[in-house]
Length: 88
Length: 215
Image 1 (spheres, rainbow over the protein chains, first blue to last red):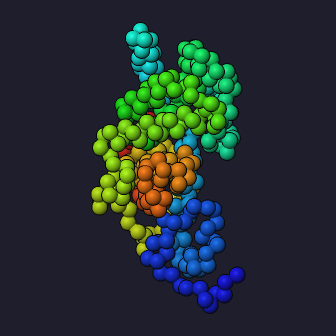
Image 2 (cartoon, rainbow over the protein chains, first blue to last red):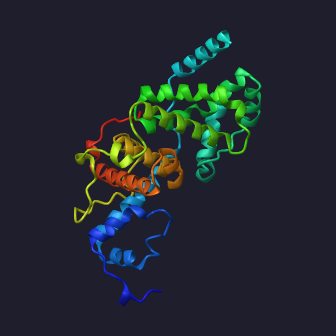
């Protein structure tokens, strides 16, 4: 545990400059006292972090494939395969 | 077709497994037969994987016509290269990577120099997400549905969209993305962060979103 007296107080600018390097592993912010300290006191940055984590979490919904190609795609593939076969 | 739909329903309940390595019944036999030149087996592989390949293309390109062209190219490429699949990774992972590489090649041919994302496909100033030093507290939590998110992703600038789709949707690591896009991992992280900030801006004002690539 870090001594709270020795933890640097970050401004919003400093905190948000470090944000791109975060979210690589879960709980990364919690492991850094400076970042955690700022989040505890800043509702704006904590709201920002919460939203960005939420977006990353919701992105997983998009993994489920939901779009089908038109039937033309398969027709074109068959046609091209047929042409390739004839030219060989 | 029915089998593909059933498998989708099954695997959708298992996101952890489905994420990069979905088990698909009958796939191994179809691969073996397709490698021996069986066109019916190839048609089965198309049925099993067309949705995932097309959706990936659509999300990376944000354009239906180009996505269909790239889906076609991906399966034609698959037909020619399937003999080289040795089963060292899951077939879907292999096909997925093949598709990503084809789409990236297509984007490079179109003139998008992916070597330096920051300099070449960064959006203009008005597209750059603003840092948040004190705006109104509108919480997103619980408010975003799939269709809205899909529309917002479709409206992201190309560089942001690529990294967001590859990392947050498809689950690639930053070092993998950096290799694919020939950029630094720091660059990949930076693009991802900007993409999320931009999405946050858009999702706070969903009424401004168009139809995008979502259908």
